[in-house]
Picture 1 (cartoon, rainbow, N blue to C red):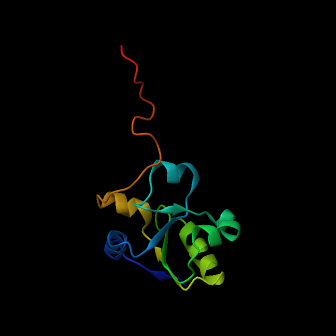
Picture 2 (cartoon, rainbow, N blue to C red):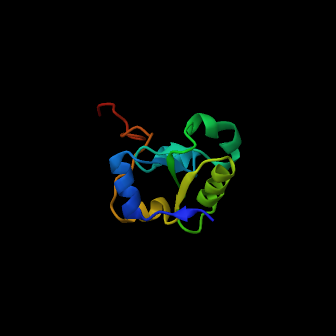
Picture 3 (tube, rainbow, N blue to C red):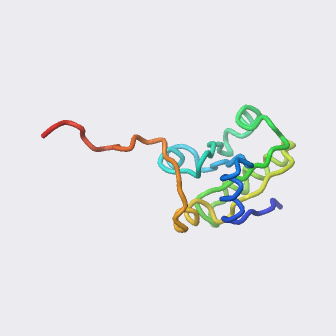
Length: 120
C-alpha cells in the first residue's frame, strides 16, 4: 500500500521544491487546473512515459487525483513503485481538497479563455 501525505505536508514540500507532483487525471482536467508544478502522467501512459517524465527513481513523488473516490492516484502510485520508484506517496484527498482549502493551482488555459478581445 502506498504511503499517504497530508495537504499541509504536500504544500510544504511543494514550497520547498522537495517533491515532484504527478497529476493522474491528465487531459482537459490537467489543462484546466492542477497543483503547482505538477506533471501529467496517467495510468495508460505510465510504462511508456515514466522514465522520461520522472527520470530519478529515488526522487520524492506524490500522486493525486480529484478526490478520495478517484482510483487513479493509487493505481499510478502502485505502478511507479512496481517500476522501481522508491519514494512514492499519494495525496488521497486530491485536488478537490486542495482547492477547497484555498491553496493555489495552475492552469494551461489562456487567462482570457472564451472571452473576445475585440473592441465593441
